[in-house]
Length: 598
Image (cartoon, rainbow, N blue to C red; front, side):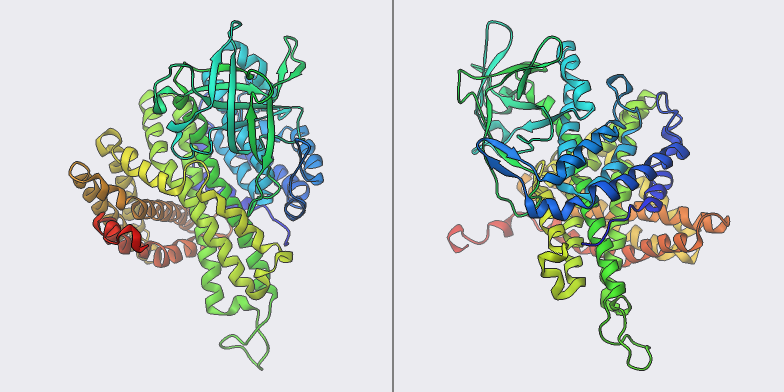
């Protein structure tokens, strides 16, 4: 497997010219997050990730995690890497200083996740899951729970999990059957089983803090009757030391297609007693609210998982294409074999990979910037608008991130030719690892339903309308920038018009036939994602163009940003107009074939 090189120049450009880190540094509490300080942190973090974490990727995949007498043994290289990661305090950088964190914007944390997932997505799962649990506990926990767990979780001394899925309750969370019975001391006894719990058991830390969805006695059916509980692997004494082992045990781990080093566990609660001891987190029957506090940050992070894997696969494909010689490129002399990067079809694949990765990074960082705006902007109206935009963008971030990862990893295999199908090269691992992201944290189909069912109508459609207005304003700026970007403006404008027309059709069909809306949800999500990514890639190209005009920055780097935007416009944005008919095709075609004919 090729070495990983942190794309610090691309990250820095996205932070400053797409996501506006400089604005965040003006907010109260973020004054220390100036560009120079963040660049220094990310440079050192990138060095650490490249040397300490990236080499564990293939080794971890080959060794995998295993279950031994109820204990999960992670790959040996993970233990040293995790100690180094937490010992340096890297996982705490984007958390509140009051909890022992660095107090940096979440945008900086997302840039760090970008590199960590490129280095080793399976390893990155542990701190990613902890962050969701930390956010939920911080938002919904009482003072005792927060004091008991938060600092140890922020430091990475303990990890956290989300326990949602059961055998009969996957995406249909309302079918959760795990039970929680009140005890006399204010705690609860939790009984039931959860499946697909990533890092539900492991040997990296002394304690694991499980957030578990369960039902109270006489709770209403469906999602309105779900509560959330804190269930630690080990009980915690009043002085903060670890006490007795709680009755939560791993009875199996899944043998997966990818991220083999990340243990995906079956957890049994209360199998050896009257129940595992748990504490209510949030309000009774308010578990869905708590869950979505975990889920929304997790969905963005799944998109970042996709970005990380795509970046690594792209880098490996570029390295191979520069070294591998085969055939003679047009115009080459003397019949000498040419590096395959000189062949048009290989160049097409690499350009697709490069522009898609850059567009995805822009979208994810833009979303993270608005998460920070929603919590730290001094104006309440701006905070609300930012929060609304985050709701709209998050399904795109999650779904498109996973689709870009799968496509780019597949293209990396193709660039390598036959060697791309050989495990020893490490290239197939990227595809295997990427594939789960389309399923994680609500499948991409669920993201599409969420987009058309909830997010498209936010503030009676004003949030989506505001986004379209911003995109059209960028089109006007592109026109004014001259011939160099005029073609991007035309493609982006046409795609935006098609997207607007599709949204209008969905809105009109909502009352008369919601099946028609659901039938068009996935192609509509694809349209939204490509337009949003193309827009932000155009924003980056405008910034590069203006730097060139001012004689600032690296001229070759700036030119490549413009070229990426133009390629994406011609090859990806151009497909948006073809998706409009799919959105408007309605549900009748989906049910035209009788079930028995499938």
